[in-house]
Amino acid sequence: MIRVMIAEDQGMMRDALALLLGLEDDLEIVAQVGRGDQIVAAALAARPDVALLDIELPGRSGLDVIGELQAALPDCVVLILTTFAHPGYLRRAMEAGAAGFLGKDGPVGELATAIRKAVAGERIIDPALAAAALNAGPSPLTGRERDVLAAALDGATIADLAARLHLSTSTVRNHLSSAIGKTHTRNRIEAAQLARHNGWL
Image (cartoon, rainbow, N blue to C red; front, side, top):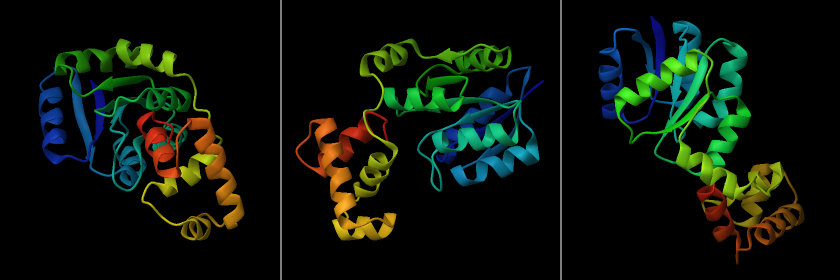
């Protein structure tokens, strides 16, 4: 049996996935969580062979958990299952060590097949997403520029951003200016929104 954990914040979607995958003869759902900050603890308790992770989770992004999960359970295969099919997310997931990246709109039978292939050592990537990721290229942002833009998504002032990130206001302004230039946008809100749309945040 292949032991599967599901991390999905929408309860109805999580229950439906668990029910439908559980009907497969060789799949067993051993854990379900609704928050990103619960993934590692639940995985350590349940010891799944495969972790299906959503990206947009409360507490912590599924993308941000991949490295920690694989450090804690090296034999656990990670598959990202998401409606947020931005090319940058695909690139980040693969760089973090995910074995697959799939949209939620596919048939459950295809997901079950993808789980089996991933356990067998294959990489599973939605072909349309793979093409988009190649066309989009890597993120032009530095890690610090990404941090500043992510913090700017809620419209915080320069002073608020500086306090939140423990930086000087001039440093925050420099990072924002650089990020705006690299994204070819008019202001920090547009830059943050574009970066998020492309999956760079």
